[in-house]
Length: 451
Ligand SMILES: Cc1ncc(COP(=O)(O)O)c(C=O)c1O
View 1 (cartoon, rainbow, N blue to C red):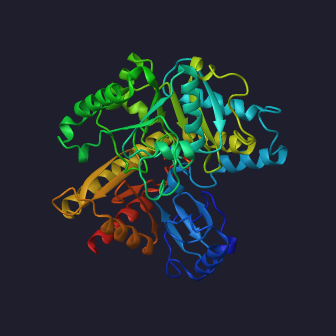
View 2: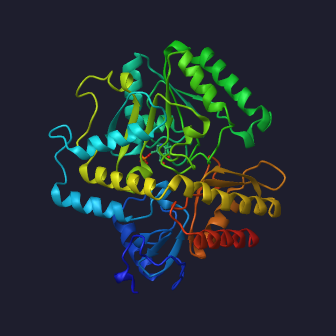
View 3: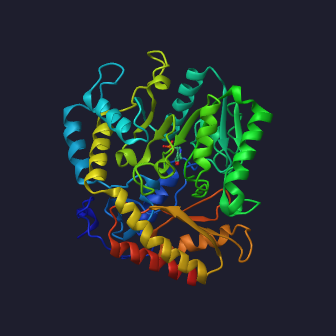
């Protein structure tokens, strides 16, 4: 098979194959063109240019086939170009590409909202609205919460990532590269300590109680409960380092919100849609948020995002108060319906749990062998290792970059994250086969051995 013949989707040979160095000559040539035409502000994890992708592999323009442990940042959970996504999108694109839901509505949009209402936590009456990106969904969730409560303040957390628009930059914690030089930022955003067990000063056992206590007392002292429209939290933090709060922290926060008339918004953009071994990460804690934001895996890479929540909150906004030209585009809706059908048919909740069941013990073995691994954490197929100077909690971003680079050179795509740049995160497509998964773990082991 030549690169030109490679067709993406599940029929792509599920193998790692390197035929050139990484990146190869054709990718380097394209990178030259990219440098002359595309803004410098867009960076790349690995400058290989994609030719096809499917299942657990990504084929580049030089014909290299790489194991994919990134899923385009938690997006292609059903695999790139999954059959049901391709067939529904193809059908829809031949019918009509756009009418604008605010001009002439269509059934696909309604169907996606019905699915979101059905699948997100809680069996109360819900409504949904669709947008183009995760950041746009977060912006709209805040709009809805402010409108419904008549309050201004928004509470967010250390290590949070909510996007790159003006409001979501204000909500995002990390300065470089997301905020540096882009201010002034939107106001009325207040940051609280995150329950981060590995780095909690009092130790992981005291993390839940102490973090909850601090959040409550800081809100009381600095903001005033009665001024808070919403608390926004990623139930498992993504870009900030795959931080899993202790059991009970989210539930405690949700109870506190309820008692104080605060809208509890779960940003499930990275953690949602089977990734953590539940449909949504909140399900693990039995937490029912008032509003949930979704995007990423929702439509297998076509731009689509949603806000779903209590009918009385969602319907508080006047007609015309929400929307946008492209939000809930019919082709993206078709992709979402194909992706959701695939998740259900292939039981990707169980697949994510199986992936976690294979990865976590192997990573724990690695941690026992290589003291540079300070913490192994995650849920389902949203898993990470945090790298530190051995025997300390001092972040080791250089070792993290070196391990990632070694994996890339060996033909495996891995991503890094974390406020301190010292976390390797693993997000394989949930349809990845066992042989590729274990091969990927061996590549990782070799990369640690070579440090
Ligand atoms: C938790 C979370 N919220 C919001 C966003 C922003 O989504 P988008 O990049 O689609 O704007 C992301 C993206 O990584 C995310 O992980």
